[in-house]
Structures are given as structure tokens and as C-alpha cells.
Image (tube, rainbow over all chains, first blue to last red; front, side, top):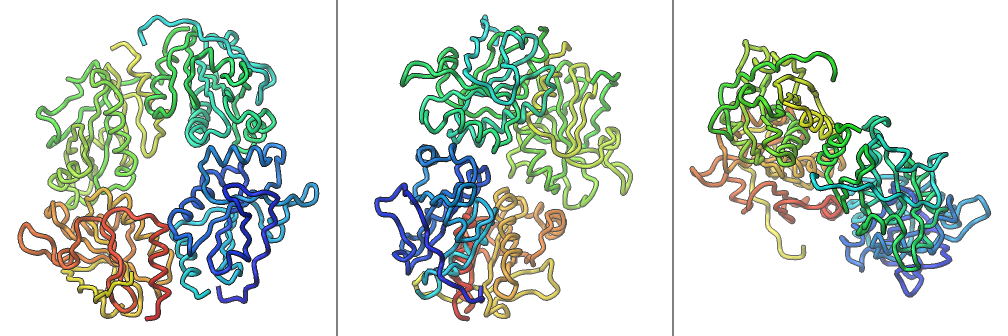
Length: 158
Length: 158
Length: 158
Length: 158
């Protein structure tokens, strides 16, 4: 975590759920931001990634940590459209804001997913108080380690 | 289980996945049939009901026990249409035949679900070798008890 | 399960807990008997074998199925003596009868364990209504399969 | 966590396992110390507390965090004596140092347990780099929160 870091790429979302104002990383500067990129029909996202994001949302103060879901669809586009996502978020009681990642070129990755170089879903990104991307996990990461990684960023000065 | 039983209502499906020939309870007479009624966006179905149905499918001989999924949608119709279901079955590696329960009147229950008097999803139904409905569980049922219930029906003469 | 079977070897216990009268397989003829052989310091017994035995004890009618624990100590004899076992049974709320397997020759297996040819702990044995040993599992066995195996024996005539 | 804190009481152990030199909080000054107080026949310690302590031991650098087990026996003294504990630590593959809390007055709590005012087992204590006790949990604490609490202390200057 001592390597030089750079500002996190902007989130390009075409629509947001669970929020009245579209969140932006710029506006969240000063807080730690957790991005949980997922697909609603990705089993690992449903069983692990999203429940973990919910635990983060419920464990930390909103003044320190903001959790954002990002629906980064790269397959089954018809089945995972925003209408379906809305039903999914309702049934799974997802309470944090969720953006719909903007589609890229046909057959390609959605735009934010591509900007972050994500390899698949679920991917969890930690952005520090200065807006720099610091940690990116593809797949499962244990709660104990993740709690420590988040607190390491909380403890830093803005 | 000593009460008089009656033939299980027919399954009314508009479409089947994971099978070339639409299964019918009549044609399955002589075997124990397990119906797993579910909705693809029902969390309890995804975390408990469907994995349990898969365990049944993998544990018993196909000569004794046939597992049928039944997608009985009574809410979020748009999000849970057959195209979405197909993607879901693929992602969750569901290997047994799954029928799409025929829609009922607008705002009402699908037809098979109504015939069986199901209260919601997941619902698991056990049909004996004679084609009679013998057990119906709404919600979670422990594996140990379910294994015993299935074997009790296997042990009966056809 | 069609191979010729023979009477289950007698249980040789030096002491029993959770029962006033020492159980005997002869006296239990007519019922299905489940023997759960374990050691109190065996992690797999504590996390899987004994909780499963408790589920069996709680799921089936005592008229059909009797669960017997068997403390078959073949290592750490001092740490796993009957006084320690009594505390263990109390703390873990084990409710079914538990016998202390009679010690064999120094450095050898306890007597009942040797008679059954058990390879280690946990081992689960199913004995049918006629007193014949029918199933013996070393290690983990899934609840669904075990429930079916028990019911197959319940369904047989005595 | 802004209340004035005071030095953690010394550990009074009559014996140590998994270490050649008895650890002391004084000698560990400069590092975060995690004390996991347990009893080998306490089900919650075996299923949750000790596996969590092992995860801490494996997740953090030994330069930052030191995990110490403390066998604080206040019941079933005969069954939970040091000989039994040694077998338990072997079977459960506990790799961090474990001290045997010094017995207090007959019928009373062991000495370290009393000094810390622990209410039972498992109890987890976090001591900061300056040797001050900062967090004490009786019972279950989620990994995500615990990981954050440990990192908060790691992030402080010694």
C-alpha cells in the first residue's frame, strides 16, 4: 500500500437506485468509499459479495465510510436489465445506493468496469479519503482482513 | 400421513428448460416426484430451496426419484420472465427440468401454484409412486427429515 | 444393502451417562439403533458427528429410532477420561445415552471399536430392527442421505 | 475510545504452551496484543472464539499483532486441567502461545480473569501498542468489526 496511487476513475452510471442524488466520487472526497461491483445473477455476488457490502454499510459510520453498489453487467443483458435489478434490490433488501454501470461497446464491458480494469464480479474497490483507489479485490475476501483494510484508510488524514 | 390422499393436480407449464420432453406426472407414475416451486428472485429459494432440490437430484437414483423445478411467479413478472429464468438456471447450474408455471388471471397466482394451494415460495411437494400428493412444505425443511420423507415414499410399493 | 448381514457386535461399555439402565442391542431389537462413536477432543466429532446425532435423536420417534453415543478413546486417554467426558456431555447438552467403550490392550483400540472394525472417529453405525448392522460411515455423511438410510430401515418389518 | 485508558493488568499464568519463553505484556509493548480467554470445554469458544483468534494470528503481521490464548478455567477444573488442555491444543491445531490462568481462591475465578473483570468465556481483549487495554468483548464479535478495531490500534503510534 506504499506504491504511488492515483485518483480513482469516475463512476459512469446511467441510473441510480436507493438515492435521490447520484453520488460522485468527487463529492465523497473526505470519506472512504467502498464500491461493490456485482451482477444480480452472479451466484458469488449474491451469496458473498452483497451480504458483505451490507455488513460494511451497517458496521461503519456513514461519516467515515460510504458503500456504493455498481451493477456491472457483461453477460445476460436482457435478464439483468434495470427493471429486473430494481426487483432484485427490493427482494434482497439492499439499502445502499446502487448505480447501473453504463454499457460499453456491444459485446464489451460496461464503462466503469473497464476503467477500473475489473476481471469479473464480484469486485470490491476501496477508495481513500483523498479519492485515490487503494485496494481492489476480485472474488472472495475475508471479513477480518477487509475490516482492517477499511480501518487503515479511515485512520488516514483526509 | 395416514389420511386419505388424492391424485396430485397436474402441472400446467407453458415452457420447460433442461428437458426435451415436457414431463408429466402421469408419465412419472411409479416413481417418487419432488416438485420444487420457486421464484428466481426469492432469496430463500436461492439460498435454501434450490440447493436442497439439487442435493435431492444428486443423492437419489433417477429410477426412484425425479426432481422437477416449477417457476411459479406471482410478483415481479417482468423481472422474472422466461428469458431471465434461462440465464438464472445457467448461472446457478440447475440441472433438473424446470417448468414455467402457467400464468393465472392478472394479479393472481399462476395456475399450478393455485391448484396446489401453495402459500408462497419455496414450496416443496412430494408425490408418491401412485401419483398421490403426500407432503407439502412451505419454507425451510431440514435435510434429515426430508431425506426420511422421500425414502418413506420410495419404500412403498408402486 | 442386499448382501447377507449378520448380527451387530455387542457394545462393551464400562460406564453409561444419560441413562439409568445400560442399553443393550438385544433389548433394543425391534427398533433401529444409531451408534455415534466419537472422542470428546476430536474436532470433526464436535463440529459434525455429535450435532448430527442430536438431530437424529430429535427428528425420529423414540419408538422407531434409538441413538446411542459411544466414547471410543484411542488416544489422549488421560485427557478423555470419564470425568472429563461427563463435563463435556454437560457443556455440549448431549441428551442421548453415551457409553464409555471398554479399554482394549494397552496402546490398542477400545473393545467395541475393534469389534466393529472402526477406522477412527466419528463413525456412525446403523443397526436394523432385527439387530443386524447395515450401514457404517467413517467421517462426514450428508443429512439428506442419512435421513434416507435411517428411514429405509424404519420401513422394514421387524 | 477517547476515555482515559490505563495499563492492562499483567497476565498471571502458571504454565505456557506453544512457546519457549513465557510472554509478558511488558515485553510486547510496541505491538498490539490480542488476548483470547477461553475454556476448552466451552462450546462458544471452540466454535467461534478460538477459530477467530486463529484467523487473527494468520491475518496480521507478527510485528504488529500478537495473539495470546489464556485458559481461564472457572468450572470443571478436573476435566480442564493442563494435561487435557495440551491434548486439546494439539487436536485443534492451535498455533499461538496459550497460558494457563493462575487459579484463584477455591470456587473463585482464576487470577487474570478476575483482574480483567471478565464475565465469562470467550472474552477477547485488545491491548494497544502502549500496553493499555482498549477493547474487551464477552461473547461473539463479528470479524468485520474486529478487523477494524485491531487496525485502529495498529495505526496508532507506539
